[in-house]
Every structure is written in C-alpha cells, then in structure tokens.
Amino acid sequence: MEKPVKNEKLKNWIEEVRQLCAPDSVYVCDGSKKEYNTLMAQMVESGAAIKLKKRKNSFLFRSDPSDVARVEDRTYISTPEQAQAGPTNNWVAPDELKATMKDLYKGCMKGRTMYVIPFSMGPIDSPIAKIGIEITDSPYVVCNMHIMTRVGKKVLKKLGKKGEFIPCLHSIGAPLEPGQKDVSWPCAPIEKKYISHFTDENLIWSYGSGYGGNALLGKKCLALRIASAMAKREGWMAEHMLILRLTSPEGKQYHIAAAFPSACGKTNLAMLRPTIEGWKCECVGDDIAWMKIRPDGRLHAINPEAGFFGVAPGTSYDSNPMAMDTIKKNAIFTNCALTDKGDVWWEGMDGKPPRHAIDWKGRDWPNENKEVAAHANARFTVPASQCPVICEDWEKPEGVPIDIFVFGGRRAGLVPLVYEAYNFNHGVFMGASASSETTTANIGAVGNLRRDPFAMQPFCGYNMGDYFRHWLDMGDRLGDKAPRVFYVNWFRKTSDGRWLWPGFGENSRVLKWMCERVDGKAEAVQTPIGLLPKLGSLDLKGLKIDERDIHELLKIDMDAWKAEIPDIEKHFAQFGDRLPDELKKQLKALQERLG
Ligand code: SAT
Ligand code: MN
Image 1 (tube, rainbow, N blue to C red):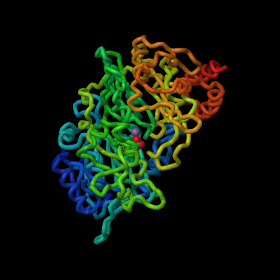
Image 2 (cartoon, helix red, strand yellow):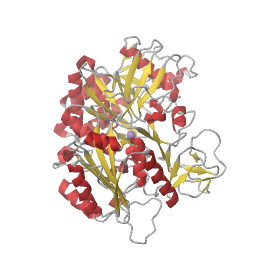
Image 3 (tube, rainbow, N blue to C red):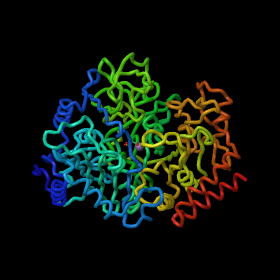
Image 4 (cartoon, rainbow, N blue to C red):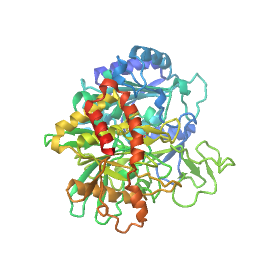
C-alpha cells in the first residue's frame, strides 16, 4: 500500500497513525477520477450518498443533525505558551491536548479504511504553494478534498524523498465493532469533537466531525490557521479573502482582495456580474488568499484552493448566476433538500418551492412546524475550473497583483455602504475593529454582533495583537505600493427591516468607485470615519433607488459612532501590551475626529 510513498517522514507518520488508529486497511489516494467514482459508488451503495438524477455526476449527503457547521468552541490553537494563541483563541497546552486526543484516536478507525490524501494548497508549481497530507477515515472527506485541493500522485512526486509537508490527521471518531452497521453520517458527539492546531509544529489534529472546515483540513485549518502563523514567521500573508479581477471598459485591470466573515457573500462578490456597462469581473478565488511581496515590490495573491465550498441557501440565478452555472455538474451537495424529480433544492432558489421534497433531515417537506427544507449552512462543493467567469490567470503560479483591500461584515445599521481609509495604517485600524452579525457558518447563536477583525477571528493561528502588528509591518514594507483600503456594508437596513442597497451585481458600482479612487478620478469627502463617496461620484446610472436611501446609505450618525468607541476600546484592551501603539493612536484620532 505505501509503495507510492517514498518520503521517509511520511512513511513513518502513516505507520504511526495506523498503529494508533487501527484501521482495517490503509489506502494512499492517487487523485484520479476513477478513485473519486469508486468512492462515490461505494457511498451510494451504503446509503451515505444519493446520486442526483437531474444533475450530472452530482451527489447529495445529509449530515448528522449535530454536525452541520464549524465548531469554534471546540477549535484550539495549542502553543507552548497561552499568550502565543492570544485572547481570541481557545487554548490547551500541547502535551495535555495531545494526551486527550491520543486517547480518542486509539482504535478510532476500527472497521474503516484509513485514507492518505497528498494535497497541494496552491498550484503545484507555485512558489507560494504548500503541501499537506490529510489522513482521514471519511471517504466523503476524500471526495471533497479531490475538489477543494489538488490531490494525488503529482503531489507525492513534488514531495520527493525529503520534502516537507503539513500533517493533517482527521477522524470522524466513530469506530465500527465487528458486525456493527454503519450510519449514513458517522461522527462523535460535540463534547468529543476537537479541531486542534499545533502551530509551532505545523501540525493539525481533528477529531469527531465530518463537516466542512472541521474535516476538510486544507481549508480553514491549513490555509488559514497554520498558514497565518507560518506567514507571520516568514513575512507573507494568509487571509480570509476572496480575490477578483475587474476590468474597466478601457481594458485596465484591477485586482481586489476582500475579507468578509463566513456566509456574508464572499462567493457572490467573487462571481459578480457587473450591472455597469463595459465593466468585466472575473473570479480568482472565493474564500482564501495567500499573498507575497514579489520583486516588483507589490503584493501578489494566489487562491490556495481548487474548488468552492459555498453556502447553498440564497444562491439563485438572481443572486449568483455564475455559481448556479458552476454547480450544474460534478458537485457534492450537503444538507440540501431533495426534490421528487431527483434534484437539490434550497430556500432562496429561483422559482416556486417544490410542492413536496425530502428535507435535509430526510423527512417529508413541508412539515407542520414550517421548518426549512435545506439547513441554513447547507453547502455545495464544486471545482473552481467549472465557473464560467473563472479568471484565466487563477492558477498563475506567481498570483495576481493586489490593488485594493476591502473589509466588511453584516451590519443592519451604523456602517455606511462604503468608505475609504485615509492611509494604510488607518486601513489596518478599520480591519482590526471590523464587526459583523454572526451567521450559521458556525454552531452558535446567529445575529449577535461581534468584532471579527479582518474576518479572521475564527481563523487566526496566533495572538491577534501580533497579527495586527504583522499587518502594519507589511504596510511598512509595501510603502507606496500597498493596496488601497476600503470598508463596505451591503447589509444596511431601514428601521422597518427593508434592505437599503440592492446588492449583488449592483455592488459593481461600489467597486468601480474604488477603482476610480485608485486612479485619482472619483471624488470623496472627508468624514471622521474615513473618505466617503461625494454625491454624484458613485455611478448610479440606470439604478432605481430612492435618493433618500442613498443619503441614508452614506450618512454618518455621529452619536452612534461615538457610542461604538467603548466597544472598540474593550475589544482592543483584551490584547494588552500586544496591541500595537499605532492602533491606539488610530483609535484616539477617530475619537478626536468624532469630537
Ligand atoms: O469553514 S467552512 O469551510 O466550513 C465554511 C466557512 O465557515 O466559511
Ligand atoms: Mn470562509
């Protein structure tokens, strides 16, 4: 079985895990279509997957109702000192956490196959790419990793005998006794779930969950938590950002990297169809950006992933036609509803709801409790290459040069549609104090306001105070080649709950304003919080929107902003000495400008 594996460290690690987890067999993945098809056929046979009649080579999975999203409460950054993990991360000392988890891992793969997945985050020939090896007992994870990362023989070849990799150990934590029948979504109860990162060792141990970021370890665990810590040590950036290319009617290209929390529309923005004439938008990535300063002095970004793991509910030909076209074939759906015709359905899809469907829990729908048919964090997994607007340079090894950073979140009030930072450090302050209402992408309360700095609150693999400093240092190194920084809020509502801004394709108007700011063409007005579009500088041609709504969207309520200050102070205070002085200065300056 280990024949394809020539790397000594990998051979030893596979053997070590085999002895600990005691699987029935070990299988090294080659990343082939045949392998994918075989595993899918097995899962259809066992009842874990349903083949969709209406979508080519596509499958539906239903998870256990306890295993539907990331588990931030069970996610750990395990460093020798707690201060390295900082106040925003759960922490347990490495020895203690390893002892606890080793007990759980003991014999945890009994009755199952242990899969070894060699994968690359980033195009294999990219100087920014990293190799990971995920060991898992979930064939669902293998198939998802096939789509989300670059898997297989070519990765092992690049690894060679002595190459380095990031070990990612995953088990669903559900061993099978001889003769015991499997369930369709095996997993461990919540109190036994652990998503652990030993950042000093570049090591990931995940136990008990089969869902999304808890289990597809290349994504949040490697490409954000481990990578952010590596990036800090090595002088680059790993960010929770989509990457898109905008092209003006004159043919000028602008590359935008935007950070929004999970389930705040990154995928929709990444695949935006501009409503303004002559502008073109292409997608480079929808969730994660790895960025390095190149010899030209500019920051260049790659998308380390190969697929999209997008939120299904709300995705429609109206909100994101490009995503709808991307998921026509070769897709994995998780926790969507199943129609009688053999297709998937979710709330917010185009057209009328089906008269009857099977909901994400496998029950007839509609039901008398008026529950949703698809779970709010139901997802599609699909190859990025299938996206009709994927950028031709999305796999360019050196990445694309970033012109603009955008931060944002969901805020029903307060935050205007768009504003620009006075300078890079002010932009870092905007990112560091960013806030958003929580969504269903994490298990926990929905709609609570929380500070989510740089949309990295759940994903920063080290002390967030040091992370702020890293941003400031990167700005110093970039100097006048640093991207311009903006903040947006597509989610403003009136007091009676109506959306003020139409969003989706119309967001191109806001992006155009940013590009014109970069070129020194669009006018802005100075306000205490930053530079806002001067009335008339935002292209609203052809948009039916009440002038009062525009005023409201660009209004700054001084009292409400003053009332934010104590919360930002409290948020910053948790970092103690690790909070850079520059951010204290920025906060003070904001306070003074507010008067
Ligand atoms: O972390 S997941 O990959 O499950 C999705 C998200 O939160 O963005
Ligand atoms: Mn995300």
